[in-house]
Length: 145
Image (cartoon, rainbow, N blue to C red; front, side, top):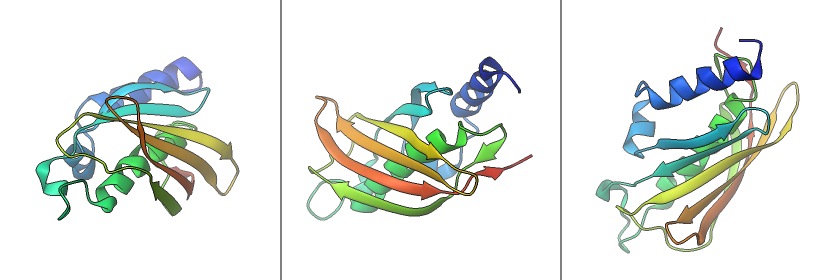
């Protein structure tokens, strides 16, 4: 898995073969694209009705979960596979109400990679391209080999 092409192929296979964790399936994640060398991941999401708050929009925890997903992927793909990047700390800003059962897009971006921590940013948009939420996180690089 030394070359970027090998790493790219590995992560695309993992993120599209359906062997993802149940939480990822619950969010209806689908990979749009990723870039190993630039450290970013884009995904689409469709929150189920079970994610609705009393006001009829998405509950904040599910919004945070979407952003955590793409930021964690951005941190994971920056490492030699197999790897993951568990979140140490995360801050989410809710900018607009997030609809359920409507197409959403999110992007996670690696900001800095250190020996003991990874720093990521994330953004969530609706189908019209309006920014709904954004987040920052600190993660731990963790090899699964």
